[in-house]
Amino acid sequence: MVTKKYISLAEAAEMVGKSKETLRRWDNIGKLNAVREPGSSYRRYNRDVVIKFMGEFFEEEKVEDINNFVKPLKDYGVLELFAGAGGLACGLEKAGLKCIALNEIDKWACNTLRKNRPHWNVLEGDIVNYDFSEYNGKVDVVTGGFPCQAFSYAGKKLGLNDARGTLFYEFARVVKEVNPPICIGENVRGLLSHEKGKTLEGMISILDEIGYNVVPVQVLKAINYKVPQKRERLILVGVRKDIDVKYHYPLPHRRIYTLKDALQEGDLFDCNVPDSNGAKYPKSKQEVLDMVPPKGYWRDLPIDIQKKYMGGSFFLGGGKTGMARRIGWDEPCLTLTCSPAQKQTERCHPDETRPFTVREYARIQTFPDEWIFNGSVAQQYKQIGNAVPVNLGREIGYSIVEFLNAYNLSKSQIEENS
Image 1 (cartoon, rainbow, N blue to C red):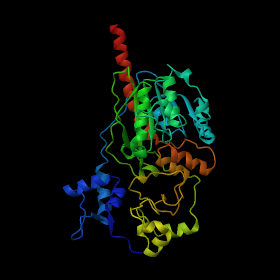
Image 2 (tube, helix red, strand yellow):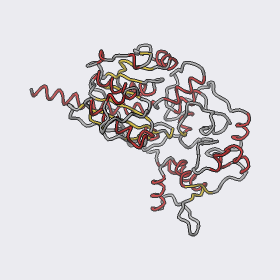
Image 3 (cartoon, rainbow, N blue to C red):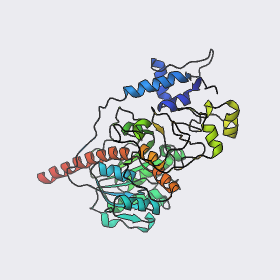
Image 4 (spheres, helix red, strand yellow):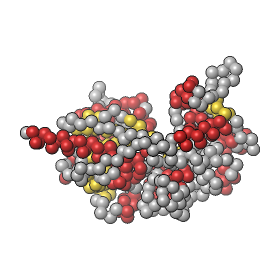
């Protein structure tokens, strides 16, 4: 097999975990040089040069210079919606926040929450059927990873009623009922461009209507928050309009953790990943992936096998770097999906031709080893793949604590002066 020597700008950006714009800038300043054929403006990269650069780049990033830790001045309560298997809730708990109640519709995820935290109040069922008014004045933050759905645009300014039938409506309804100082919504990066940005505009308009100012939206990269995975989450923060305290997103860490950090004893975990069950590839896929080297993907296959494996996708544009992909030990994992063996999003183990096991999946999402997932292996993968990485949740938790500390101090000063 002949490994492809040159890769495209998009493929190089995917390997390094940076945007194409960043690589263009690095090329211009000589940090990572591209090559161009005579008469062409298209950037190509020598694959070996990129791999060598990645090793040096991640070594440089191993200097730890950020600490987002903030100690809560008092007990702060959280009401979490669409809680899933508890990735965000576990992270917020690690930051010192108290989970007062969690709502989730999936029975297996609810069983996972109860198994790991028997003292949590898990409200199982459709959010539509719950009234949360009893938590008004009892929680300091409402959080939720609401699914992204389009709205029906009835007028110039989208109102809460126009969002009925969507899960964001339910999120906003609960925030209105509970009236916490701050609310945090999280979603996929694609929300930025969903319906050409109108969906996000509608959400901001609705939060404004119910009395919340929205902090400028940011997409947080999990690799910047002690997560060995190239996962991105859009964060939507609303601060109640009567509060004159600024919210600040958690600062990114410089160190980038890799798959080795996730699965082997080191700074992230104090032991190697425990053995567990896992999915298997069908024989036909295993035979193909056997030929893919660590950090490689479908373009590293012989051309005839490329065409057969990719089918019509072979002739389409784009790098499609997630297909037939084997992760390397010294790089972060690509974003985990809900099904580890599905075509187009393979994340193959570096040394063995198999998907990551359940516990390996959980490690990459920075769940503690003692966090047990309920249901079949397929259900466990789904829960883990849908979760917010625990360490990202913890860092967001620190930012919430920082905000609530400042809010409570300002409130105390006002009371003293009145």
